[in-house]
Image (tube, rainbow, N blue to C red; front, side, top):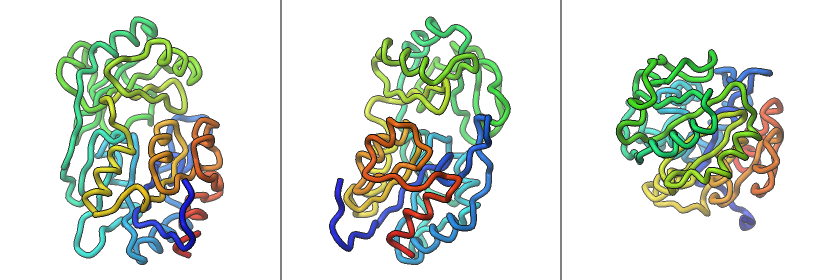
Length: 277
């Protein structure tokens, strides 16, 4: 949507991987380091009174190190707000305190996917530890420990998010599969490769940010959101200004209000500095 002249965001919502952190070429992981230009831009926004909110598909324990790298802080004596697990978990930090968690029964959707992709592996977050996985994921793709657990046990009770990954497939194959299956009763998003996130219906980064904005007395019109992945689409559509990173897939670029430089060009800093330079 278009923003009025003189508009300045009250919330800067930032994806992590591919937005704040650069991808390791040819690998499904990012470098765990923030470039000085991005760090400085974030702190100019904080100093001007904006709330900086991380919004990621990562689990909470995978996001707190990035908050620490950024020296993220709330306004006044407040702790920061963080939207994790694609909106299913919202927490304050530091210390880490979960204030909202959405769960669902993932069993039927997982069963449907595995019938189509029997070689796929499944992961469910084990908060504070890492993940319970049907078999280990490729090195570097998940944060924390991996605890091998039978699939039936992984989805025996309510969960906030399920990851399904097939190293032998492609993102396009997963997009087609998800569309054909419909995956009733869940929201789903396909990642940078054959990586499928399942979450409760109606839950996304946008719904998580809506909750945070309400708590801060703000609305979507006050939000600048920056991201690069398919799991950022709802967030970019919802925000007063939604900006795609330069290397984003076309589906993301198509819904964005604008496109900034790529993560390798510190595009997030370029966009933030439009308002806080």
